[in-house]
Amino acid sequence: MDIILLGPPGAGKGTQAKRLEQTRGMVQLSTGDMLRAARKAGTPVGLQVRAVMDRGELVSDAIVSALIGEHLDDASGGAIFDGYPRTRHQAEALEVLLGERGRNLSHVIELVVDEDALVERICGRFTCANCGAPYHDTAKTPKVEGVCDDCGGTEFKRRPDDNEETVRKRMEEYRAKTAPILPFYEEQGLVRQVDGMGSVEEVAAAIDAVLDA
Image (cartoon, rainbow, N blue to C red; front, top):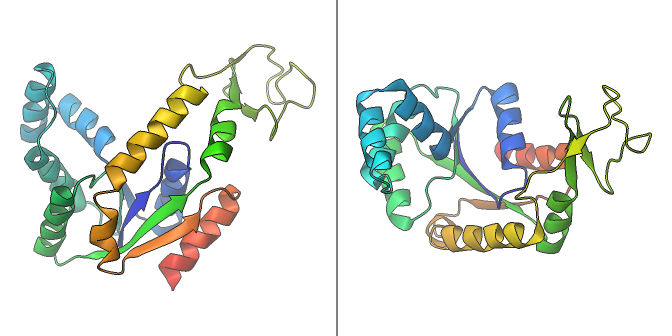
């Protein structure tokens, strides 16, 4: 089963993709991760990636498609596409890649979020500077104020990009990037929407319901 998982940064795509890898043997295909890995590995495609990135240019659709094709062959349990496709042209290229392997998309699952609530969710995050235990200003505070529940550390940190301006900008970018491909998949009846504002378990159950339908 091959699926596309859509949702803005902070919607929980990574968490749900990792769970699907563990429970269903699927493989998350993140273009960003693949480009970095290919560059480091020095494969033929990786050498092309390195040359393009060293010139400060964007990696072409042809190179990205080649990378996707390489990793598809290792995803016998199904693939979760994350960050690809982002344009109609890429969506059409993906159809070709899958068709060449006798595969096809089963679902395009969009995690739907409330923007204001997502801003609060992301901007409230912080972690223990010592052990990395996650906390939140309202959803999960340390049992003893200023003391990590797990290691007893007293220093905490926040990601510098976890601020309202950055989060709203990422939401705008997400809408701009997904707008071109949603109609393409809606025409094929593949799009399913899941409430991304529930707990991890609730979102997981909703995704399972789509995949098992």
